[in-house]
Length: 142
Image (cartoon, rainbow, N blue to C red; front, side, top):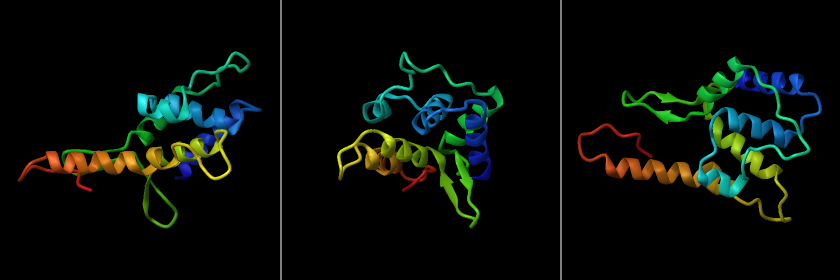
């Protein structure tokens, strides 16, 4: 997790004055997290006419892409997670998507897309994969 935080700090250092929402959108774009589902809740990562495109080092883009591509391989190795200080692993994508959803304009009691982006989609895909694997095949299980 320290590496992810350091990447965010480097992105902010290289782009003074970049708003937090723009930082998150830059990370999302670098990680290619722009499918229709995500765009439905968060919009696109295209900058508006008043803002310039943030600068991001290619090595940082590669790191973010790897860190945010959450999957379980056929050998049951989990990728796209980071180690926290207490030794647990956390998937980066739902955390960053949840923060971005919370930063968008919202009504007082409702953050649009928070649960679908951070929890429901991952659980749904996990259950779908688990039930479509068939007996004796490796699963990514719920």
